[in-house]
Amino acid sequence: MAAQNAQVAAGGLDVVVNLRQTALFADLPEADLQRLAQGCRIEHYDRGNILFHKGDPCHGFHLVLAGQVKLAFVSAAGNQKVVEIIRPGQSFGEAVMFMQKPYVLMAQALTECRLLFIAKDTIFQEMRNAPDFCQRLIAGLALRLHGLIKDLEIYSLCSGRERIVCYLLGEMSDAEGNTPDGRVEICLATHKGTIASRLNLTQEHFSRVLHELADDGLIEVDGRRIIVPDTASLHASLGGGRG
Image 1 (cartoon, one colour):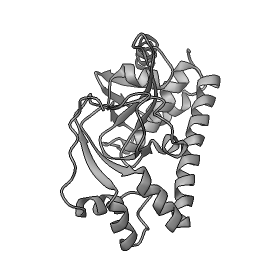
Image 2 (cartoon, helix red, strand yellow; image 1 turned 90 degrees about the vertical axis):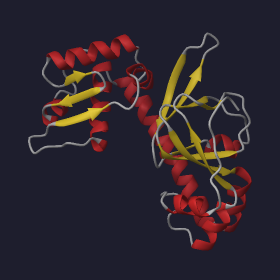
Image 3 (cartoon, helix red, strand yellow; image 1 turned 135 degrees about the horizontal axis):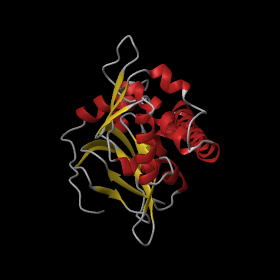
Image 4 (cartoon, one colour; image 1 turned 120 degrees about the vertical axis):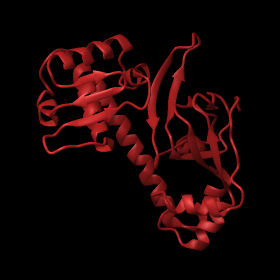
């Protein structure tokens, strides 16, 4: 594994608490959580740390407790295509774990991160013990697949402007400072180039569209701060304007 700052939590109590706070494990009985915790560890990564590279063996999967993780393909020339940005409460690595194959992409901490790693052998044993747990894992994988299909639809049918507007509207669910007149402030959690890659756009295209939206009075841009003066107007802009 590449240079990183991973630490194993002392004792199992912290692991059980974190398992209980995640949707995948929240309803498991205490005894099951205690058993599952034996195959888990809490890991800490600094911003920029690589969790794994393409081709590294997969020994389990991760749940993000805090921070954000980037999943990306990397070309031989070092160029990256961001596939997904994983946020708190989301998991990654399950599909590769079930296939028992090496990782097919790389993962990097976009911010300081706290993750829960669940070992493959522990998951397989729990699946044998609890059919309901299998259903939850399948549902999680199905939701991920649905998201990827939705991404493909957006990339194929929507203009660059529409992709960015949809992204901003999606970010509003996590934004603070909502006011009755619909004014929202969004703080982009990572570099614009990373977000552009996630939206299958160049950074130049992404920046140009932000400027166009600002010229149209739909947003105000101050570094990573995006202010939407009126959310209804931004919604109404979908389907119109430039590419």
